[in-house]
Length: 610
Image (cartoon, rainbow, N blue to C red; front, side):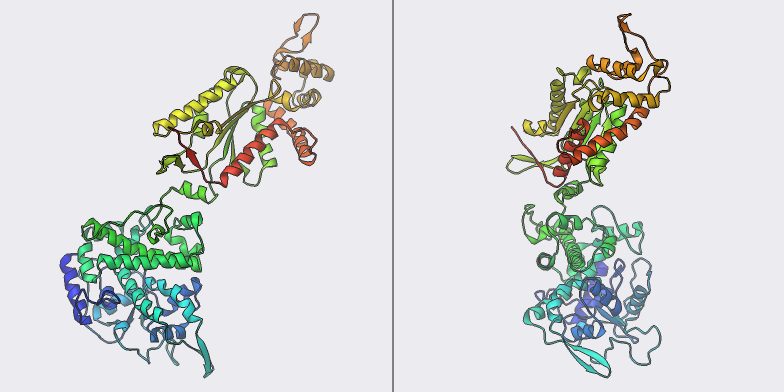
C-alpha cells in the first residue's frame, strides 16, 4: 500500500464519518467499515461471513445463535453486521487501482462488486433498520441472501454475549418462537463498540499480518507468495496508522483487553495451553471447539494488533513492548506467538515428551533378540517409546561416544540466579547390560568406563558453556554386568541350554545329551562364554585338554529363538510369585522402564556448579 493511496482513502473516511482522524479514540473510530472493505487485499485471508456462516461459527464456539437472535443483537447495537450489500448505489464507487489477489469465493466476489459500485453500507453509522430481514421472507427465491456480512474478527465478542444471551425471553406467535433481549448492561454497552472497533482494525490489518502469524510458516489464502511479498514490502505501517486513526497506545489497550478475556475463559492452562498455541491455524476448526476456539479467536485478533504495534515501534512510532518474565501473568505473555521454550520443552512440561527416557545397550546376539520381547512383556503399550534398545557390537567396542550422545542433557539457558540450567527435554539415562569381560566391562574396568562416560558428558556440556553438578551427571549412566560369565549362563540352566542347542544343531558333534550338559557346566565353571562349547569342545581327561572344535557352529539367533519361551515362562512366574527369582535382564529392563516413566512425567532442570 502506497502512502498516497492511504491518504486518499483516509480523506474518504473523514468525509463519510464527519469527524477528524484523531477524534473519539476512547470509544469509537471515525473510520467506517465501508472504508475497511475498500482497502486492497481486504477479506482475502479470511473471507466475509454470511449470517448463516456466522451463526455456525458461533455454535462451533459454544454460543447458540439464530437469525432472530442476531437481529436482536443488531437492534441493541451489541453486534452489528460488518457491512451490508445493497442493490442500489449508496456512496462513491471505490474500485481499487492496486493489484490484489483474485477473488476466489462467492462472498468475496459479491463484496468486491458492491465495493466497486458503491453499494456497501456501514449499519453501525445508521439508525436501526426495522425492516432489515435476517430470515428468509415468504416467497423468496432459492438462494436468497440478506446482503449482510460479518468479519471473522467479530467472533471475539462472543465471550461477552453468553451472560447477556441467558437473559433472553421468548414469545410465540404466528407459529414461530421470537427471542427478545433486554437492554444491555452498562459494561456491555461500553464494551460492544470497543470490540467493533477492534474488529474493524484487525480486518484492515489481517492481510498484512495474518499470513505470518505462525512463526514456523507462511499461510496464504487466495494469493501467491510473490504477490504477498510485494504487498508486504509496500505496506507502510505509519501511513496505515494515520489512515485508521489508530495510535499505538490504543492498539495496546485493545490487545490487552482481548488477552485479559483469554485469561478469564481459557479452559486450559500451563503446558497444555502452551501446546495449544502451537497447533497450526488451519487445523483449529478440525481439533478445537467451544471455549478453546474462542480463546484462539481472541489471541489471533490480539496478535494481528500487536504485530502492527511492533511494526510501528520498529519505525520509531512507539516504544517497544516490555519484556515480561516467563512466569508473569501479564496478558502479553499469553500471546499466540509467545513461545519461550522449544516444542521439546513444552512437551516435557506437559508430560508428553516423545524422547526416550533410557537407552539400553546390550552386547550379544541372544540378548539383543530377547530384550525387545522382555520390554514388550513388562512394559506398557508404548514401551518402545520409553526405552530404546541398541547393540554394543562387541564387548571391546568403546561405549563412551554412544553414551555421551545418548545421555548428554540438551540445555537451553541458565536461570537468572545462576543455580540451574533449563533443559529442553527430559534427560535420558544410558544403561549397559553386558558380559563381565573385555577392556571396558571387566570387573576392574567398569568403574573406569563409567568415569570416562561422565567425563565426556561433562566436556560436551562445557563446550556449550554449561557446568553441571557432578552427582546429576553420575545419575545419567548405569553400567551393569551379568553375575555369570555370559548372558546365556546368567539366565539358563545347563540342561535348558543343552535342550535348546540340540534343537538348533543337528549333530552336536556326536555327543550325548549328558556330554553336552557336562561341557556346558565345565565352561560355566571356567568363567568362559558359552560359545567355547562348540569352539573348543568338552574336556578330555585322557588328552588333558578340550577335544576340539565342532564341525559347524551353533547359530546364536536360532538359539535365542528357542530359548525365548523358556525365559518368558521365568519372567511370567516372577510376575506372579514374589519369591521366584527375577531373570537379570528383566530386572535391568524394569529399572529402565521405571526411570523412563518417572522422567517422562516430570519437568527438569540441571543443577549448576561453579
